[in-house]
Length: 186
Image (tube, rainbow, N blue to C red):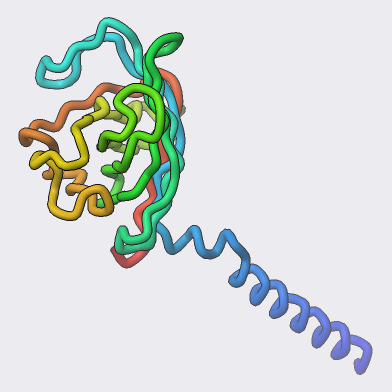
C-alpha cells in the first residue's frame, strides 16, 4: 500500500510539473495574442462589387502577431504578381474581430517602398471545409496620406467597417489558407 501511495504521489507531482511547464511554454503566449498567418494566391479577375480587376494573379504571405488588444503588432508580409512585381512589408498594425482581420504597415522594399499598406482577410475555415478564405487587394498610399485612419501605421482600421471608401472587396483565396486568431476576451 505504501508503494502504491508513493507511485500516486510521484505521478501527481509529475503531472503538476508538466502542467506548470506547459503553461510557461512559449506557445502559451500565442494563445493570448491576435494572429494572422498563412498565404496563398487569388485572381486574376474582378473583386466583389466589380472593381478592382486584375489581369494577373496575386500571391501573398503573412505572419503577424499582436497583443490581444491589437497593440505591439509585429510581423512581415509579401504581396505581388508571380514572376513580376513584389513588395516586402513590415507589419506594424493588426486588428482582429472574430474571423476577420486588417493588417498593415510599411512597405520595406519592392514596389511602392516607403509607402503604407493595408490588407484585409476573412478566415472561413481550413481549405478542406468548403468556403475558401477571402483576401482583399493591397491598399497602398503614402504614409502621410489623409486616407489612413488616425494613428496609422500603428493603428489599423476595423476589419468589418474600416475599408477604404467604405467598400469591402474580396476574392476567394484560390490556393492556400489564412488563419485569423482572435485572442480570448477581445
